[in-house]
Amino acid sequence: MIKRAFLRSFLLLLTVYALYVPNTAFALSFKADGFAVSTIDNATFNRMKGKTYKDDCTVPLSELRHVKVLYKTIDNKTMHGEIICNKHIADDVAEIFYELYKANYPIERIKLMDDYNADDETAMRDNNTSSFNFRFISHSTKVSKHGLGLAVDLNTLYNPFVLTVNGKLHVEPATALKYVDRSKNFNYKIDENDLAYKLFTKHGFEWGGHWKTRKDYQHFELPDAKVKALYPNNK
Ligand SMILES: [Zn+2]
Image (cartoon, rainbow, N blue to C red; front, side, top):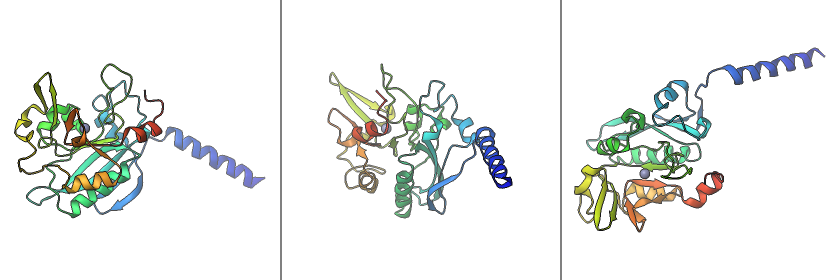
């Protein structure tokens, strides 16, 4: 009888803890020095609120992860980076960036999109690497893959988004015109021989450089079928 009462109060305490204790981060599976995957703690959420995590955000915070990574700059400096992405790819992202780090793959910067007020164009001009930024696909209630944290953009200035509409070239960021011609050689260029391309595709991602009607050379995402299986109500 005493045992049962003890157990009951223990369970009650646990429930109270789970309900009222502020969301604190705890480490999840991927482990390496300088790398960590954790849930979003309050301090991080405060940085995201109203920026990448907009007021109309339909993605529960519990679906997102805070991934801490190390990376190498082009002059071989070791830097700390942060990526917010979906829990379903967090371990893959940590592993991919770990492999890139070990291989001295040059990345200019990895900062949260919130540091750019969630403004994509500004972040791309700064050659930032990132994942989560909540948005609906234009004129729909469907959340985009960056909105779900299921896409990653890498070295964005040198690997722009390119689209031709009625013969008119459209480039994002607008400062990336020099990098539209992919037959040229330049730093940070992603192509099929590139290690990031090889690692992302090995982990089941699709590359925007393979798209037909538009090219998004910086962009790796989970394929539609996988996203549909994870979020069947996202229509
Ligand atoms: Zn993208």
